[in-house]
Length: 603
Image 1: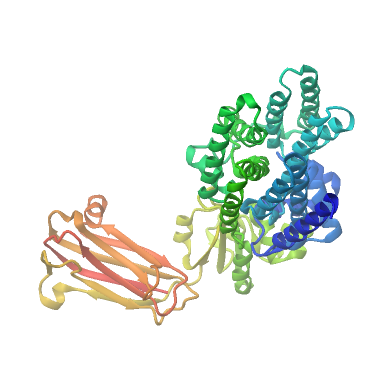
Image 2: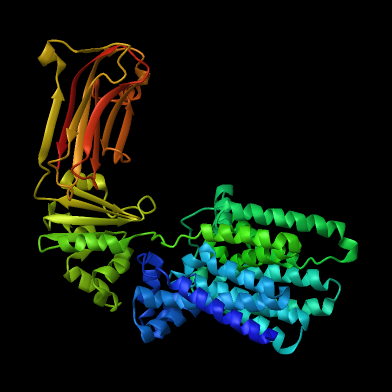
């Protein structure tokens, strides 16, 4: 079988493998916010898609393509993400072709497989975002550059310009690859200034072509602040681990590079193969440029913003292992593949699980209740799962939701001027907690209504507030030592757990919130630093649902309640086998006196 036929068979098998792998669990996670926004805008006329892109850091290429895609294939998690899958498959194909032409067939196969099974590639093929397309265009840009380096003239230089311009138009941070490519050209041509000048002109032309877009839109005139800051070392370390799928593969790669570096130094006069240095420049320069830009101009360092170096990491791993020698290749390849496969998570995690959240709320919504979405812009993600018809009408989405008692403004569920609610029950669905200021403070809500339910999903918390009812008292348990024994409870040095109350939740309703209020009076005692007041909600042989430990000494120092220690908490997701335990933990065996140990449970 001749080489072209063998390559075609390998290519066909890579396509089938990549397609099957990246289609797996494509609808497992719900839309992230940015996915929902991309697809929501994509349904609008093309002129509006371009106008929207002019107010966004992302250039219009992906927005226009996905707009044509949804207008042809419709709106669903599978269809919109399948475009990313196809781009991922084409990236594997491009990697194989580029790597096999420049580094040999073995490296081409291995690099394509590394890229196919890399966890970050799997993650971004499962998102309706431009990042899978970005990886494809980056590989095409470097592939065209390597071809132009063999014969730097005519159509080869033009293709290099075309793919580089396309790469930057997919995502602007990929422009950091241009200085990396410039250094690669300098390293390979050294004193051939005419060739270096040709590459420099092509690179300048690609950057200038994107500059036309930059100066023609209003976004880049704004001085927007980012929600994250310049990267600390732990963030850089995290990104490195994400790109390689774990620290094990990073260590393996560094070990191989160390061996190749030592070999290159020893054999520098004999002209040993140092082609792997080009890949190292591809890997390092865009990352370093991104970090420098983050400190000097605006923070942009995140894994998705330097995703253009991911193909370099996989190709460098494959090429550098190959150059270690035939006796080391096979065991190193086996070790690398094992680490890659081990790091794959086949269940993509949603940043914000609006799919499950909406499924929880929908059956509960009636004419006496309303939904308040916070922050307001999540109404588009909510709409996709609540009423897809509303989502598919971008100009009318919010109007349809309001008609079904779904709001994004506090004034729509509460008459602030007259200080009265407009509804009996409101389900407050909150995303991005800790990152954005909520529409209304929960302390205000707690003073106006009763918190009757609490449900948490990844990235989303649902609080149920009732303006017309309060929680039922499930149990009141009290140990009043004075009334029962005519004295307080005296605790000696031998008592580590001197007093406790246990209440089963067998009569509680698991669909509702359980509120727990516990207290104890410290009558006397010194050196109480080792005394702790503990409240737990637990199930036998299961992790704690609640585990609160209050240091008595610290609490007394800041408390305005005299010598009474009080603890309040709420729990959801429990079942009727759970137990509430309230007790004192006298870890340092302190002598003291206590009274009135009490717990009140409402549900």
